[in-house]
Length: 330
Ligand code: PBG
Image (spheres, rainbow, N blue to C red):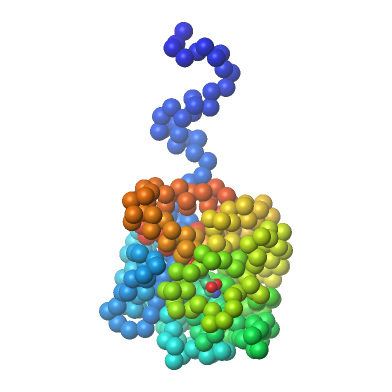
């Protein structure tokens, strides 16, 4: 009789936690570098790398520096990046005209990345906000965001990105019908292999604040509640996901991630498509801030957070921690 047998238990879950080898045998969820998509901010200029104040450790890169970051990430096993541009005010207008300039910042960046690192999956964001003098994702008229007129511009933007060599376009605007319109236009031009990563369940969230600092893209009036979803709604997420799938999405996304783990879980049950989740700028900033204060063990919290997003049901995670995690998992 050993010391601790007084309870005569049939089941002792602790048996399988006795050693790290046993624990790793029964581990249900794994975090892999291949699951991560690295969001990157690009700006005009040369030889520049400017830290985003509210996102310590995250930078806006000029193209030459961005290429280095992409190469280093790829070397570490990061197979996909998502690009976001900082557009000078002088190029912004209400119709987001610069968004489909074939020689604009994003097309030039895509071409350069594809030349340097052809194997990396390049994902471009399709939405007007970085290009809009209103800071909205669509065209504004009398204080309203116009849906169908905006979709026409988003289609041109997606085509410009595909022509530059993007592997995947990611509409993040939440206009109705944009996935179908983009799919149709891509196919008509022969871009049958360009995929659509749809921001399907994108919530009107206060967690996007630091991202809007990074791109100087905060709305000039009002908020985004007439197109992004209400944080209170879950059924509506499934409706949005079903529509995007019917319209031809290849991957559906939930955004943000942490306050929406239940949504990720529901979407996972609802579809056979890969599910992505966006661990957004505000989630990044909170962990960095507490880590800098020494209030949490930052590295452990990062890994636990990303693992929880996978456990909820995400196959892919967009995260500003991608490179740090790739180094940790190496
Ligand atoms: C823009 C867009 C946003 C993010 C990704 N694409 C901001 C917004 O909708 O206002 C946020 C990403 C983040 O916070 O990390 N369409």
